[in-house]
Amino acid sequence: MKRKSLWALSLIALIGLAVCAAMMWRPSIAPLDKPAMADAASVERGARVVEQGDCAVCHTRPGGAYMAGGLPLVTPFGTLYTTNITPDRETGIGAWPPEAFVRAMRKGVSRDGHFLYPAFPYVHYSRMSDTDIADAYAYLMSVDPVRARAPENHMMFPMNFRPLVSFWNLLFLRNDPLVDVPGQSAMWNRGRYLVEGAGHCSSCHTPLNFIGGEKASEHLAGGLVDGWHAPALTGMAQAANPWSAPQLVAYLRGEVADHHGGAAGPMLPVSLSIAQLPEEDAQAMADYILSLRGAGAKAGPDCAASTSAVPDNAAGAALFVGACAGCHGGGAPMRTVDGRPGLSVVSAATADTPRNLIKTLLEGIPMSPRAPSHYMPAFADSLDDSHIAALAGYLRSQACAAQPWADLEKTVTTIRQEGASK
Image (cartoon, rainbow, N blue to C red):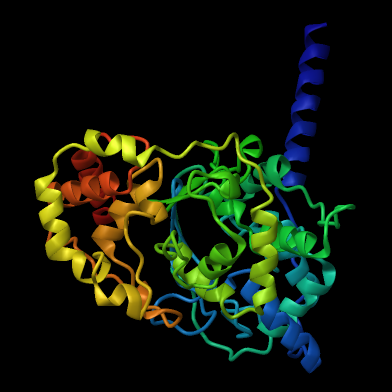
């Protein structure tokens, strides 16, 4: 009996190993013999799809060639480098037939059979239509080929063993293409398709669990990306400082939104990508996002009643006069000339967390081709942690928010150290 039990256990173990091996293996797909050709209409449509998917945001590093990769992506599991997706045959996707590209987009598997890390948002691209994926392929195969090989990734064990991604896929890869929701408008359905599909907004705006999967129960409830807080996209129309459709469209297109400010941090290049699209795409996204209800609308504070409770912050007020008032003060010419916002209403000052305001003060906002008023200098080298904390506290008090932020100087120090460790 013992021998039979041992044989049975051994057989079960072998079957389990065989199943695991089968799950962790994918065949390679034969390379193209010659470059793929596509009609001009497909290439033109594909350019729009690629912008919707923010492909250049990740696959073009600062100062690098278009779509040639090499951008470092810092994750909790190590640093990844984006790959070359130009049609170079040796280092890009020039040898990829259409079926290999479709498999990468829908299954997260490269042409040679290795698993792609889910930092490449195939869990969202898999929800795109066949036509959009085909058009994206046509466009990418039409750009200038660049010979550029991405640096080696630096992933911690065991995540440096790519086949383990197959088990991650079992948990998070749904492969359910989006279909229109009956009873909703064409604009709403278009916006849902862009936000949940190509735009992969929940990759940043949904909190992740300990293995890097999105928490379905907190869909679009906010996340953390590169040290920046990606705010919740739910309840934006019901917030204490609510967003209107024109404001959100302006923000999405890289402009400064009245009473909210402009995009900064990782969202800035995304907004500049959306700005390349027809405005109706941003309008559709705004229509869908503003329909999403939050956990509950927050009542706005009674500013008149709370004014007397604002703590004295002479240091912060003096720093504002010296560093900010020239552009953002009540009488500043730039407020009327190019629409620079008053800082008492920007979302970074009214948010529950001071993270984005502190990051903006430390790092500034680079010059944008969309709006001169978007630019802001960095103060990391000219103001120390106590100065940044005092200034952030002053701006918070002027915003008449529900309550002051706690431990501001400690938060500033932490955020500055995060930036230094990259």
